[in-house]
Structure formats: C-alpha cells, structure tokens
Image (cartoon, rainbow, N blue to C red; front, side, top):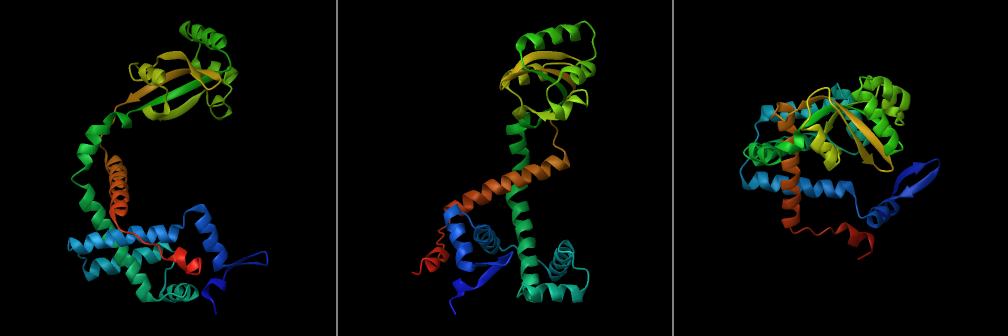
Length: 258
C-alpha cells in the first residue's frame, strides 16, 4: 500500500490522507514536525561535537518529568499511551535524552552571553505602570488634561470619557508597559516623569490619549529576565546554526513522486 494513502485523520466522517496533510504543509511552507526535527538534529550534533554527556540518573529523572507532563502517572497509563501512538518505552527515553541534551546545549551557548546581551538591550526592559484615557479628538483630550491639572482624579475622568472598554471601567488602568509598546513621544514623557504625573495628548491611530504614570520601573537582571534572555539568545543561536547547516528535506520529493 502507498504510505501516502494512509488515513491521517477523520473529521466528521471525512478522511484526510497523509498526502493531503503533506500537500497542505507544502502549500503553507511549513511543517512543524519537520522543522522541529531539523532543529533537534542541529542541537544534538552540537552536543555530540562538544562531547556533552548525561548520566543515567539525569536521564531517568527527565523521562519521569516528561511522562508527568503528558499526564501519565503509572506504568500502565504510559504503555497504553505509547501503544496508541505506535511508540515504545525506548522512544520515550530517547525523547527524554534529546530534551535533556537540548537543555545542556542551551545553557552552554547562552550562559556567557546573558550579561552582555542585557547591557546592550537594557532599555528595552524598562517598564512603567500606567493608566490611559483615550478620546477621539485632540481638543477633548486637551480639555481633559486641563481638568487633570486642576485636580480632577484621572480614574474618574477615565471612567466617564475613555473609549477603550478594556481599561475604562478600571479607571483607565493598563498596568506594566514597556518602551516598545509606546510611541517615541509617549516614551520620552513616561520615562522622564515622576509618579503621579499626567501627560498628552498623544496620537494613537485616529484617537488621542492621556497617560498617567503610577511608577517607572528601571530594568534589572532578575532570574525571570535571565531565563527570558537565555531563551532569546538560544533561539538566535539555533536559527543561525540551522541556516549554516546543509538541510535537504527529501519528504517533499517523496510527496511529488520523485
């Protein structure tokens, strides 16, 4: 039997064959299983070249962690799950090994770069706690700014006039906002302001908004941010490593009957 004619899945009684699935992947220019496999192959090759190893205890612990992530809490459940997918316990262990090696590669290629990456991009991680008041004309925004300067509470004006329904009933409260989410004019105002200052009007699309600064939070290299930066650096490294690799996806040729 032609493997391409295997039924991949049914939807409301309609069969989708493997050929249909792969054709869609070709048309869309993506097939995540292939892309993920290529990324894994590049990572594991790096681990082999740099003699990165794992011990049996680490391996078993990662396999148990993977099993629990899949919601499998007993040997019986695990065997049923694997059998339903045409997999074996060896496949589970191999996946656990690959994940563990990936974690080690990620740590090696990022740990010495995090501080420098942070210093280079520190301003990108500054944040400010803000409230907003959005209206549809500069004149109205300017009038409301005058009222704020005369002592009207920002939250009351926002509840009355703000056109943004997601923040209106919270008195305009938006929460933490980064520099990249602001216009240049807004960024300049916010990060030179002290807590309690209002400013504007700032054009936003066809509307205008006033901003109230609750707090400016300068960036700091927290553990949470270190993890985020490690992920960014690793993705950049892996994307470049894949580009440098000679990749020949034969699957598309098989689909075309070559």
